[in-house]
Length: 220
Ligand SMILES: [Zn+2]
Image 1: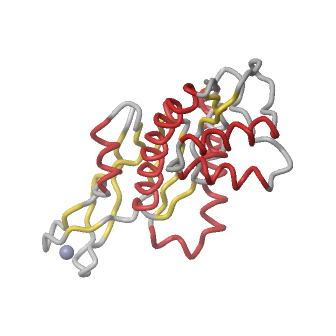
Image 2 (image 1 turned 120 degrees about the vertical axis):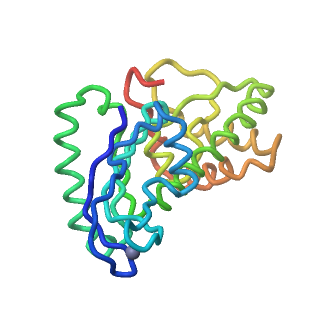
Image 3 (image 1 turned 90 degrees about the vertical axis):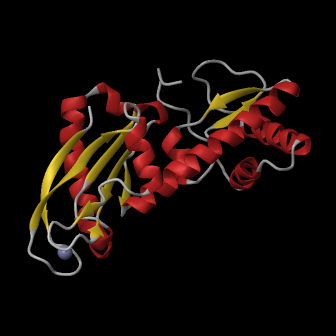
């Protein structure tokens, strides 16, 4: 369930401090409205109680979407200068969440750390665009006799790459075969040269020594 918290903040014009209600934990997989708020970049936008100026009170948001295996800690933009400290804080908080949420979190991989909501919006937009590309690629790959197979999501996301790769035959849990994967990607790009994300995959893997990681068992 998503929930709100209260933060004490001062508007950029320097009016007297006031309390503001902000979302501090958002389940993107349970509330499309809140997910769209993140995408639009206006989630947690507040209006100064004194002068009416709109602004983002400094607050930390945890964004969570199990469908796309995403957990993100969003710190205020102003905290970027102290990134090392906030990453350490995230690790601490995440350990506590792991203890209470348990198994679900095991499937998510490393949390994403963002400074400012716009960084998270950009990730969600990129995820959505890549998902469109996966749909097109799936169609082309199936016409060539390939099936699409998932890659560990945080690995793909961190590199801005689509989360599915073409594969001819594969056994559940067996790793990708790198030469076969390169061959499949070249065939896919030959049939559709507009698949930018897959071109990036090819580039990434041509210099790789190990195949891309599979998602944790049980997550498909
Ligand atoms: Zn004000």
